[in-house]
Length: 144
Image 1 (tube, rainbow, N blue to C red):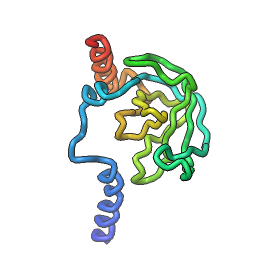
Image 2 (image 1 turned 30 degrees about the vertical axis):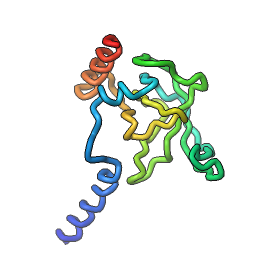
Image 3 (image 1 turned 180 degrees about the vertical axis):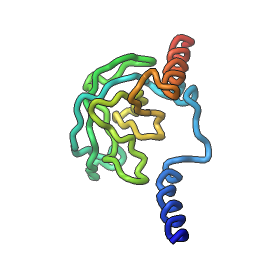
């Protein structure tokens, strides 16, 4: 039984490995590359179809989220007020957009905000993990 449980635990860790890379960019590196970085609260999510920009004939299902901006660190958020993510699933690198949750978004040119973009969600902006990250983003924004 212990063997089965240890195999199950190892298999559940594989999706996390799939979304990580050998080099994890720092927040400063991600910030430097981004055209826009902002904090927002998701107000609505829905499933939508999205044409793959690399192959427009391929249409994928995505989660589209509308948001209200709380703070802008860099650039100008899209005028559409929408970001996109993959539907949440093990190993697909989705952020897991949920209405009512706050996020820091680093959207790409198509509004995608997958985990490896640097985007992250949080429930408490005063939390011990989140507050220092937000303060660091403010410092990066003021040093530009």
